[in-house]
Image 1 (spheres, rainbow, N blue to C red):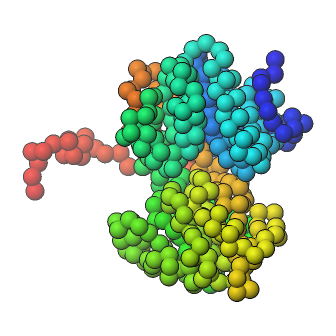
Image 2: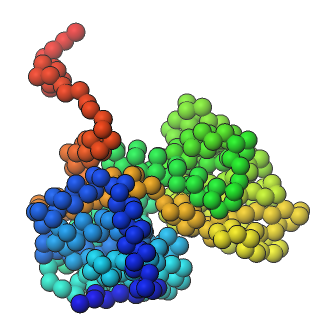
Image 3: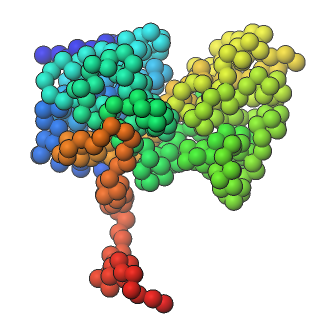
Length: 424
């Protein structure tokens, strides 16, 4: 029996299945976790309500959760990242209730969030929440508080979402335990720095064909994502300027060899601008007013508020679509700026997101954390860290998949590290 759904075209399921299989080839750690789940069924009796990017990589995660016994419902966390063929394949071949269409409007987006909760909570048992940006959790708390009694715990997958959850918790609003998968050491290093770094450059080059070498590349924010973007741009020959509001991160950028300047300075000299701050209005009217003709504007943050889009629209004399994910806005002074992917998260909207080898770690970590939550009493409401042993296990599994061997500490070395009595 086919599960409930709202997808663009079930006829795309065959192509979606091929895409999912291709991504799975680059996800050996998740495949190993999947074998464990199929044998042990750690999620039997549980439902999972997920708001994630609907891509082939996350589809492989949902296949593992289904193998582990869970009933799964999925909505898209960003309308422009949805792969319609992947959505169709999940409905037809994996019995996942999917409510996602590429390009859906804001009303449709929130309708899908409600549909996911309806589908996940229709059956018996407790429910886990998988969120990417905190919209599903926010919807539960503001629109459907009665359903919170059915939520055992949840997982948040993004920096922006974790920030929102922490503010909810400080304000006394958060009524369920949420685990910040995004905040593990391996995730920040592997996913944010290397995954976001590569996929953002991939998206910008795909969308525009710009030559990165010799350009002035401005990165707003030097957290793990911004660090990765700056590294990749420099590696391709760009002169990279970093803007920051955090002194410690600005100092790190300086020590890494990047020039740190205020955005008021960078705006007048940059060729390509990428925001990765988790904040809003990073690029504003006063910055657009001094930008060079042809400046490229891209956002790598989860939500489209990092660029002041209302201010940009107000400044535009004309606007037109010039490429698939490129809009040209003509400004005063016979200048134009090029807005990528409507200001949405560029690596997913204008490209295919992280490489499968990166999502391998992310998805395996999510699956193992869910199994841990299912096997143990739920922690109290609030934001919680992933158990460190899961992070260590993930790193070890990835190294094994890469064919990397490690030294093993000797008993004497273990004793030395664990003792306070040894002196110099």
